[in-house]
Image (cartoon, rainbow, N blue to C red; front, side):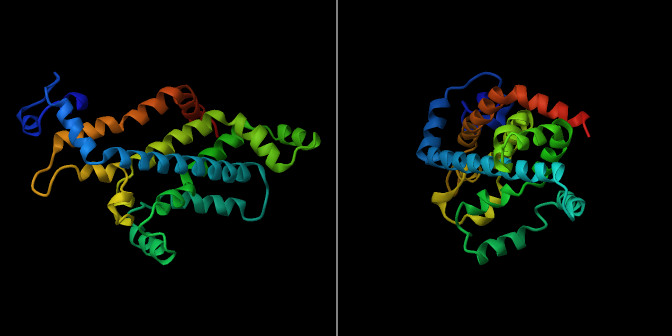
Length: 246
């Protein structure tokens, strides 16, 4: 339906539900391109890729440590991480913006890339998966064979957690790709806009070009469809395994 709506004029969208294509598809695509949508599109892409990489790496390392290493305060630390999941991000938005301003990151992409690396859900997800599917005997065997902790982590642990890693990567990418509120309040330069903000700005001061925005939304779903098509097998298995194991 979204694709069909993207081929109609804005005034036609108010006349009813359109299940057949219209004649304004190329015109709407031209509006999107003239608005510089592609540059915002690729900015969102590189931000989402970096967020995904950092989030998976940090979450995997922290979750693995909480699952397989014994150290003082481990359970208290995990409880603290779980508590942070109960706090809506909107509550801390003012403090977050103030912090980004104090460290000089306001008006850049750094607030969109670095803080999401500390993903509380990712840590919980990886901890539960590591506890259930990584035998301690494998770690001990790797150490006996001469593997250091980093070698064991990168060459043995991560490959064993492939379904969980891919699942978390998809979720992190989608969350970053669709993020609107945080970029809206921390980015104050149009050239740094990400895709969701750019979509909301398509049109003019006196006329909202909703057909063009819907065309941009249709284009924006392409990466999501691609990554899910490539990782759906692991995504489904990761969710099902994580849901039935302690």
